[in-house]
Each structure stands twice: as structure tokens, then as C-alpha cells.
Amino acid sequence: MYHIPFANACTLIALSYIALKLKNRLFMERYEALGAPLLTGLACILMMLQPIPDHTLTTDLSFAPIVMAGLRFGWQISLLSAIIPSLYVYSIEEPFGWMRIAYDFVIPAIISSMFHRKETDSGFAVIPYIDGIKICSILAIVRVAISGAMQRDVSFYFFSAHVMILFLSVAAVIVLIIMYNDENRNWMLQRRLELQANQDGLTGLPNLRSFMNTAGNTIQLRPVSIMMIDIDNFKKYNDTFGHLQGDRLLCEVGQILRGAIYEHDYVARYGGEEFIVLSQVTDYDELSHYGQKLCRAVEAHQSASRETESTTVSIGISVSAASQDELLRLISEADEALYASKNNGKNRFTFFNDIYMGTG
Image (tube, rainbow, N blue to C red; front, side, top):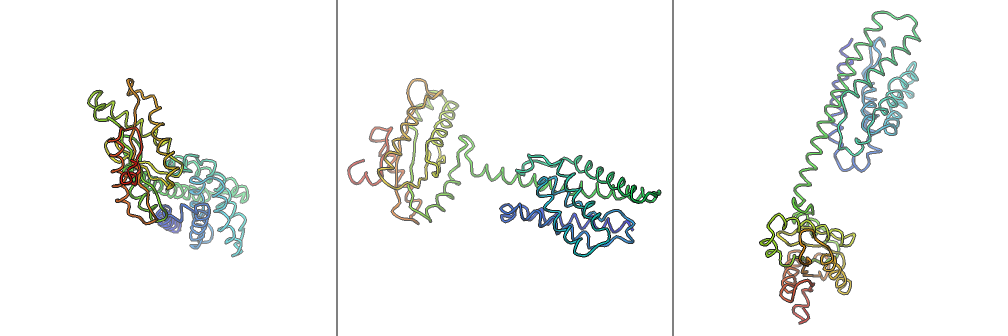
């Protein structure tokens, strides 16, 4: 007769594997508060569809999904997860259904949520295996205490059945925790690799690849402006003070620009001592104030790497005429305007259009 809960444990593991694969899908992340209780409740019902022969065993492991919900999400999701299987038990008019609801859904939801850790809310933490063992042990003690008090005539078989289910419960929950932790580690590794692929390793700013993706999507929706920004006299500074101090200066300027740009704009490291900004500002008067603001922000910074003189930047600005403009052309124009700023004395900004109008 023990083959039935064993088969249920295998079914539970298979269901959990499917749920873990669905977890990282976009709709699950967005609607987790709804999706998690729904999937957990359905898993509980599927576990109950295999009947226990003559009710001699104490559970069919339908409580295990509730335990995982409590460990992963806390008391709110775990109690919500208990609603669907509880309604199912009520609808089929199972004998002593209220005991089933209390044993397999409500009590496991409450006890497992007591072991919930806040850091798992973000998905960046693993669940300790010992917590699963503790929960299963507490549930077994509760079952023995309540069932023993109701039956008043306990036997060796009574205890052996509970011990067997305890071992099966612990094994099933431990496997579920292992699966979750492994999937979570893979998810964290994937996010870390994505971050590394889109982040400049020196300054911590987005890299050019990330910028091109963001700018390419944005320019399809609205007109934008592109700013190419270059640190003045950086090669001379690098040759004088060394590459370590040069790297430090790059980091400082990158952080200054990150803090100085407008909220909805995007700054990235273009390469070398150059940075690039995607801005939604396209009005020339406002861009003039913007360019001056960035120049002054860098110049006013007291760099620990540069004690003798202020750090300055030169800026080239190109503005798209309409949405869906050509991004590479805008970058090329901003780069050309940048060199005009360099040639005209540095520590200034220049519009690409001004080069050919004689005002650059």
C-alpha cells in the first residue's frame, strides 16, 4: 500500500519540475501573486486524485505543494494556495473533509510560512534543507497527536504508518527544495551573465551593446538626441599619472554623468575615454542648458585623481528629425560634433547642425 504515496511523490516531483520551468516565464513573474496559488492549488488536487486504500495511510502528500509555497512566498501565498484544494474537498463531500483541510492545507500553510525567509522574496536566496525536515517533523507530530487523541486506541501499525509517511514526506520535500535551489542558482547565474554582458566592467555603466539595444528600441518610438562625451586631455593624463589613475578618473566621470543626466535618459560607456548619452530631449534650447550642465558638473567635481587642474569634457550633440531615424547616423553626427568641440577649445558642447551653419 505504500506504493501509492511513493507514486504520488514521483508525481509531485514531476509537477514541481514543470512549475519551476514556468516560474521564470514573463507571465509568471508579472502575475506571481495569482499564478503561484493557482498552480499550487492545482498540484494539491492532482495529488488527491489517487485515493489511499481504506484510508489506512495518513496522507497522500497533497500538503507538500503548500509547504513549498509557504517556504518560498510566506503566509499570504500559502494560505491562498490552500483555498482551491479546500474548495475541492468541500465539493466532493469527502468524509471528515474538515480534517483533510486542516491537516493537509491550513496547518501546513501556517507552519511552513513560519520558516519563510524575507531574502527568498527576491528570488536571490536558497531554501535551507533543514527547514523542510523541521516542517515535515512538526506536521508529523501534529498528526500523531490529533489522530491519537481521536482514536484513543493506538497500535504499532498506527505509529509505523506515520513514520513511513514522515520519511516519504521528508524525502519528497527535500527533493523539491533541491530542485528549487538548483533552478534558482541557474536563474541567478543567467541574470549575472546577462548583467556582465551588458555592463562595462570598469565603470559599472551599461556598455555599448546595451546602449545600442536600448537606443535602437527607443528611436523607433520617438525622436531622440545623442550626446558623445569625451574626457579632455585624457591621454596626457594617462601618460603622466599612469593607467590606474586613468581608470579611476574614468570611473569618477562615469558616476558624475550617471548622476547628472535626466531621469529618463541613458548613459553608457562608448569606449576608451568616451561616453554616450541617449536623451529624450530634442529642443535645442533645452539641450544647450543640458550640455552646459554636464560640462559644469564634471568641471566642478574635485577629483581625487587629479589634484592640479579640473577635469573637463567635450560634448557633441546630434538630434533626430523624427522617430525611426537612423541610429548609426546620429551617433556619427554626434561624434563629428564632438571633434568640433575639441577643435574649438574643449570643455564645451557643439550641435552637429551648427558645424555647417557656421556657429560651431
